[in-house]
Image (cartoon, rainbow, N blue to C red):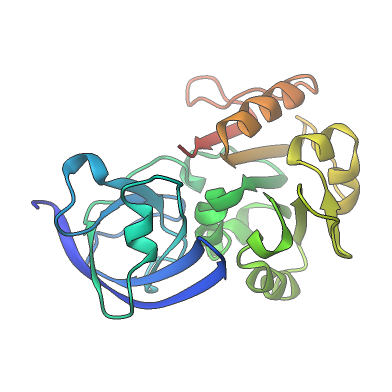
Length: 246
């Protein structure tokens, strides 16, 4: 396939059934944290390629956070790969969900559900992030604690960067200490999200990046709009940048 690199799975971290981080050796063009590439497997049709955010820093081995889609044609094959197996990686990274397109702000909130955490895992490894923002908050919502992938990695990063606050939210189990119950939207609505982060989302000083479930994004946009935050566009600067998954 023209424009594709034949990659090799070099390692994997399995967080829960049907949720893994795949580390891949492949030749791709330089990328900015937050961008994505298409993945596929040999023998798949053009319709079976899928976009995945790169979850690693530029220059590091490529990583992708993958969840199995019930009845999907590609994700069961990706998650069924063994170490050393090959897959196809599009060479040219794409996307505008990067810090380049985020306007100046004091605080940056990165709010994800599920594998929407992927691009943020790359962005938090960027030196630009820590140079531009005084406060960074990463919010990750999932069904249960096992699906809060890379939680330990983010906690280690927070120890290195005191400006980083983490908020984990689980919707289908009683949360352990340090996690919130419910959904991201309900946590914003009832104030528990900001209390846990120790920061307030206000248009004067905050920018919010949203990535994940489209329903979460639409509901968050409405809740934030009630506070005076609006979607960011190059010709009409705002406070919200989005990346919808599926």
